[in-house]
Length: 245
Image (tube, rainbow, N blue to C red; front, side, top):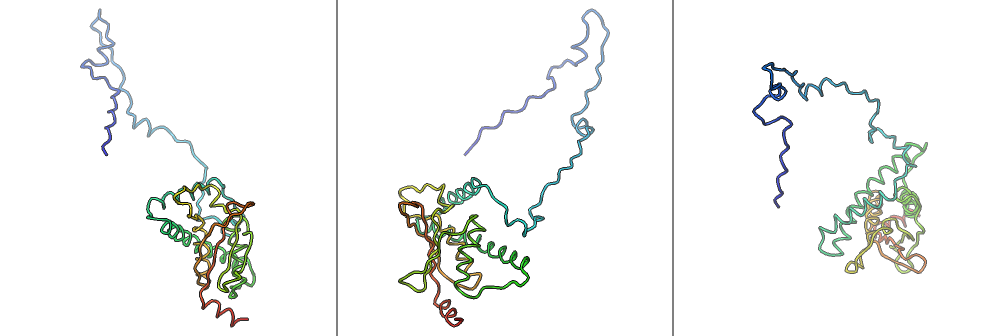
């Protein structure tokens, strides 16, 4: 695509063949008036003293990670960033399944970093830090600590499937990611909370509880945007947990 060339800037110097002295010369006299040479713009800028600034630019790498746990992010900035992620992903997918897979992949990258920062804070503040090796405490950690670190509040519920022993569900009645997303009719089956599912899956994988995590819309009259994060654990996780009882 070709763009029109910008209009050339006009010179502030006259293109006339007369000098400035000739313009100012009186017609009745042959006396010439000389004008002092105008200072160069470069020399003017160089000689102008700049005011000293005492403002220190903050560096995010100098921020104390332990004291940043109570820091809040604007909900509008949070929603804007996620909407940009969704729009960016939408242009690079071929269907709903591919769409959710890519959102899950991006969320997985976030989840690995959430795991790292949460355990770093626990180890730096606790006198006797420990790593959970049982399934239920890890799931409760996801419902409380992970949800609070990412969304500012715990999840609304944690349930075990009555039909499948390897399935657990994290309930979020008002998911933050779904609050400002308008899904078109041709993408009615899309769940943008696949991003959240990726965060949970990365957290479980990092603690050696491999599972397949998916997001599903389960709306009701009271909570029309309710989402269920379905965790389907691998058989090895259940066998190991049974041996530890």
